[in-house]
Amino acid sequence: MSASLSPRLAAIVQALPFKPDSRILEIGCGPGAAARAIAAQLTGGHILAIDRSAAAIAQAEGACAEEIASGRMSVRQVPAEEFVLQANEEPYDLVFAVRVGALDGRHPQLGERVLQRIAAATTPGARLFIDGGDPLRELPIPRQS
Image (cartoon, rainbow, N blue to C red; front, top):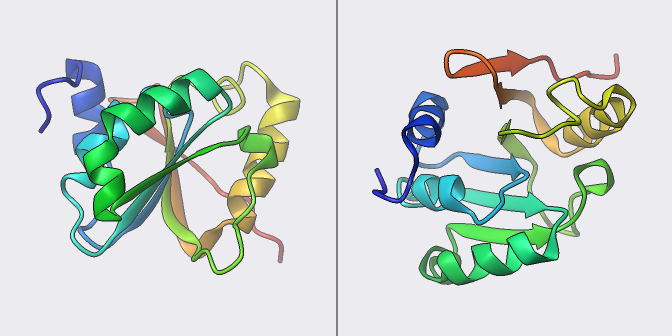
């Protein structure tokens, strides 16, 4: 585990149920510390780290240049409520967010839009985790029946 992770973030990364070949989406990646720690554990998988902040994405690009170059990680500046899969982009099987107001109840209307975007960008058995548990809690991904 990366020495640059806070104990709280390290506990969150450790608690995520991903495999070396998982496709993971991090919402609100900030400078990319968690995504970098996860990318280091992926062999055939990929993590996409998104953030609405151009400054955060620039920081993540700099801090995670090696992981991005390896193909295990990519970053994208986009608000979660506007996130859509790009052409030929495979859906994700694990999503997580730390301190994201749209998912932790601080912005419920925005949260509904974000959950719809997550549902459209994930596999049928995908799981969504946010901080606020011990150390994580799982949220249901709404599926159209």
